[in-house]
Length: 218
Image (cartoon, rainbow, N blue to C red; front, top):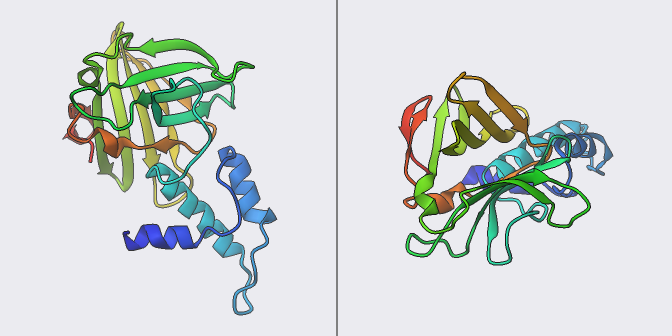
C-alpha cells in the first residue's frame, strides 16, 4: 500500500463516510471525540482527516452507499447522489469486468421513493459492445488530479468526473456539453463518490479530448 494511502487511512478513526459532503465535514470538524495529542488541540487532525477521507473517496477506496439503478448482476463503477440528493449519477458494469463479455452503462435519474430510483436517461441501451462507446482518462493538470469517463450521444458530450486537489474536498459529477452551442451544464454530486476507474484500464478507449491531450485510464 502506498504510504500516502496508509497515512490517510490511519488518520480516519471515528466517523463513517456514508453522508453528504457538507455533513461529513461538519461531523469530522466538530462532533467526533478526537483525543488531545501531547497537550495540543486535535482540531487540526480533524481537518486532516477530512482531507484524507476525500483522497480515499476520489481513489475509490471507500465503501459508500448502495447504487440506485445498477442491475443485480452489476456493480457501481461510479455512483453518487446529486442535486442535493434528488438525483443520482451511476456507471454500472459487471464484476469481474473483461473485454470479451463486459459492458458499461451510464444511468441518470431521480432518487425517489423507489429503492432503485427512477431512471431518466440510460446510455447505451444495449450492453453488447458498450465498452467501446466510452472514453476513460486519468490525468493531472495544475495540481488537480482528474478521473473521467466520457461518451457522446444525441449532439451532447457527457463527462462523468472526479477532481481532487491538495486542499479541500474533491469535486464530482457530470458535465453535459452541447456540441452545437458549446454550452456546458454541470450536475454536481452532493456526497462523496466512489469511482473504480482503474477497472477500465485497457478496456475502454483513451480520451483524445482532455485538457492535456490524449489521456488513458490508469
